[in-house]
Image (cartoon, rainbow, N blue to C red; front, side, top):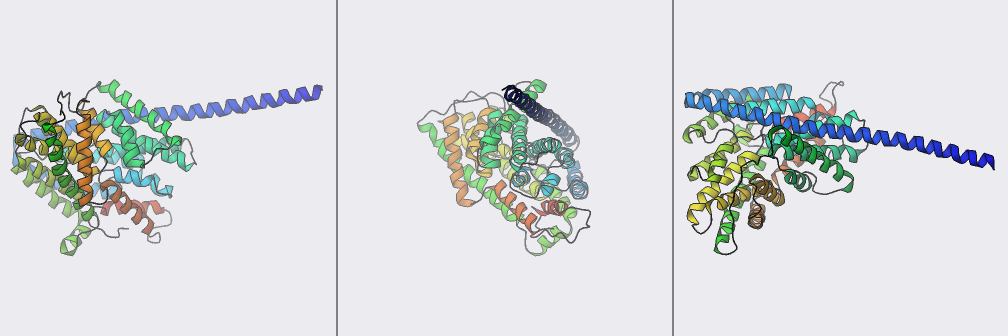
Length: 473
């Protein structure tokens, strides 16, 4: 009897000890993830400050002499491309296709290189440099890859071997990046579900939600509870005003779908002499793209340089009016910038193009508040480009701090999404991610020294993603 009691007590003590160890390990992992999410918020804010500094410095250069950009942009894009290929392979482009691909790649040697901290550092450095030079790019897409890289680094630090846990950390980092970049926590969550993972799994939801909240709170603590485009107090009452919904949805859908189709086609390679030139001389091609951007900038009086944030905000609040040539030239500048292969995203330029479309349409719709038409044009084009209508709706709604137009925004977004699908059957980020995964699967391993992993070869394929390499290796 006494032996039985002693045995039960011994078992109970051992159980308590094991439970204590498990609880300690769980808390250590939880605190580590919290630290990672806070770090994402801090770096996102610092990245935003660096991008703003680059915009101010570029504006001073343009004000001093607009023609200086004929030298600055070609030289800057050539240098950026060389640095990317030489030191930061995998940093080019938006960063969102890379992040999506890492959620589906089984070879974590590739994932470790695509989401390395070195690549994240290169993303910050070269995106800022691209904005300084005048490329039509944004920082929000790169922030997604940076956030995913940081959280993946913390996942490796914890020694995770579970694939679901690793991918949960990447997903949380990408969502946290969107949340901190725009100060739009809901958009971060929706973006992770709709665009990054295309699903919502209970196993990763807690990590993702916590990451979004902590990164967002960190950003607010550092820069205040701001809204990206300020507060807009406009409405689109049901009735004749909804003509704007149809008009913006169709025009924005056609424009955004065409944009995606052009980039997807360019990523598959350009035939003929131009394609060979791009493959053989990528640095010279980037310089050529820079010259085109300089010409577009001179024609637009500098309006096509950078993210387009200042122009979009001015169109929204009605302080400035731009002709139709603005969104056309910005459309072309963004395509050229992305095809050059330098690091940089599409979010901010797409919002600026959409605002330009809405600003042009509003003059033909006197029965709808001008500011509301601009928001509808913005959500239509953005939804058509990313083909993620819920994300587009929530981002625009949160960025303008306006819930009154939610129904109209959603209707416009889904209409634009449908129109875009008729022009471009595949979502842009998904198509680029699929291409990257295909090149990873085809990447040969015999061409590299034994000391280098297959992942090094695979990440090189990203360099040719939008530069015409059909089978980069």
